[in-house]
Length: 138
Image (cartoon, rainbow, N blue to C red):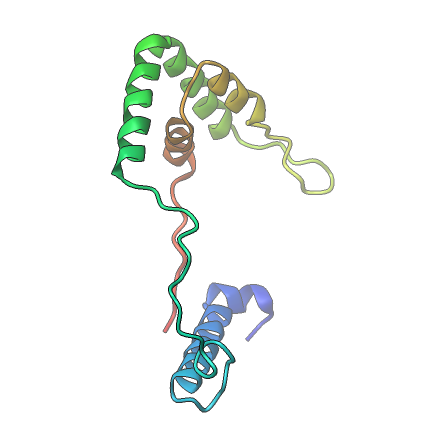
């Protein structure tokens, strides 16, 4: 196939993992493979509710976000996010060992200090880098 890089580019490892997972699950469901507590020797009892988050939590978080955006300097947040995007878009300088010297962390910290949200910071970086989509070869 030409090495691991070529295999990854062609989706070979993902395909093999998906196939192995499918065969394993099929065997468990057909009871060809016994998994104690899953498909044999199962104790019937109600699962404990460890954490339950209802709609009131989302409502409170939304209210807190509205208040945050009202009291912070939105112009300052825009400036800090613009500086982050500009830094992220710079062509990275590679050291002799091939490691990039580009460092966006100080810009992220500045944005956080201006009360930019995680979502706003992520969106700024998405605008520069895009979104990774795994290629699945079947």
